[in-house]
Length: 323
Image (cartoon, rainbow, N blue to C red; front, side):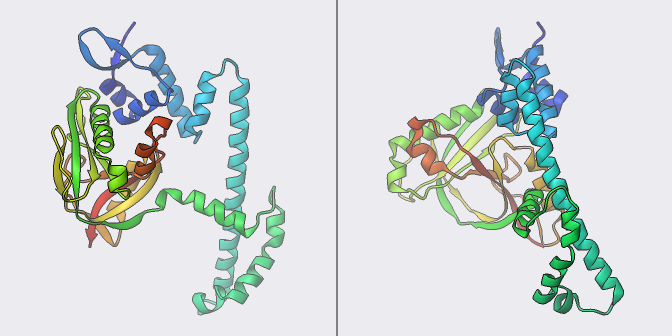
């Protein structure tokens, strides 16, 4: 049976090695071992399954639902999930049609009097009230009526990928867990878990924050390093193999994702590059060109670790500065 390395699978399917490791962690796929070879390899059956996962992801099927499809022995589960997706698509189409109708009416009103003030007239409260009345027949022609609350919710969902915030990370003292080599994220993560437990960090600094980043990025073989930082009191002693460091902090663009949605790094990076107000500001840490990730529920994760909690959300952070 042909076995393919994680780096080659990443290149062939245009999917990050980190995403592959995450899929394995949540049970979507399995890797195998190769004699005298330290890195993950995948057989043909797993690669076929990955191709199916990629197709389903492009159809915006959630990972939980994808797992249900892959684990089912017949088509009943897939049919049910696809029908749910069709209903969801109809909901979004209806919302977009309603938005289109509102915009068309705005254009028509403005075209009738080009010197009218948009802020003072068209968007005034009384005008909006009348405008909503005027589009009621259009809304009734859709498959389902849409309230303004439903419309607002749909609009937020459609624009969720653009929910970028600008945040300031203050200078802090951190304890670093770093490993270069096979399974670097797991090795450094286990070191961090042990440090947090033995130092009783949940009790002495319950507001601690946890950051992570590649250091260095993966090479041709897929080998790479990973480093975790946890914020600590300035006077806390840190023993080897952990290291005590200073993080300068600074201004960052932040975008929140669900764990596993690492593909959103690409769109997030495009947002920064296209911003009229901010520009990329490369600085430490340099393993991911200055970008870092923050695990947003670190305290609850480590405090109740034995309850098998999982990290649910990440903030993707890109260093920026004002143009």
